[in-house]
Length: 113
Length: 113
Image 1 (cartoon, rainbow over the protein chains, first blue to last red):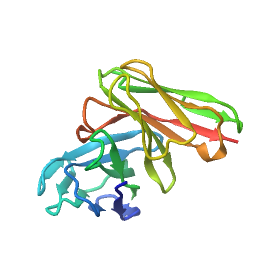
Image 2 (cartoon, rainbow over the protein chains, first blue to last red):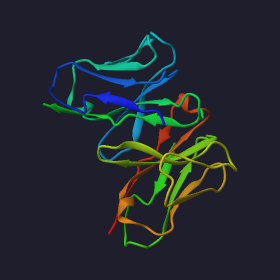
Image 3 (cartoon, rainbow over the protein chains, first blue to last red):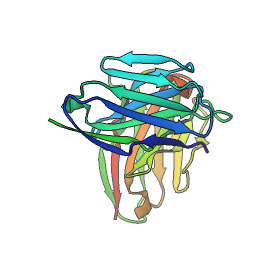
């Protein structure tokens, strides 16, 4: 199946810093989804991207759908302690079932107050 | 609005025992999914049900069975638990195709000893 590669695997930052993480694939994706998982909880959808080049914001979060359709980026501005968690990228398999989502392995974000 | 409800939240099994993980959603979603989450492995799809009356294998189906009991409920059964099935299990649902994003439950933490 398709694989999504997320980097970095983990980040340790100071409160107030900006954060950038990305997700790449060897295959073309038509949709990119970004999720956040708080400790002990299930993932929650943050941003959905449906068009190459699309730039979408949700508060302090901004995500972009790469022009090549093989990558996506998530930026968090002015981080706060509650940003702590695991951030996942995900997308539906192309050429396969349109119901199934493939997830990256996640970026673990730690924010030092 | 409860969303996706999973029971139990925690479970310890002995090797060889069986159990069923329950999942119910109240959002009138058509599709439901079971994922497992292991450290460093991200989220891996076990089984999914695109609509009531249908089920299909995901990436890691061995050792599991599922039942789509009705539109609301999708259960995951371990017939003979093994230590390799120690994991956190997440149920999710979506109204239609995966590109719309899933809503996840809060997970079941299973330990097989």
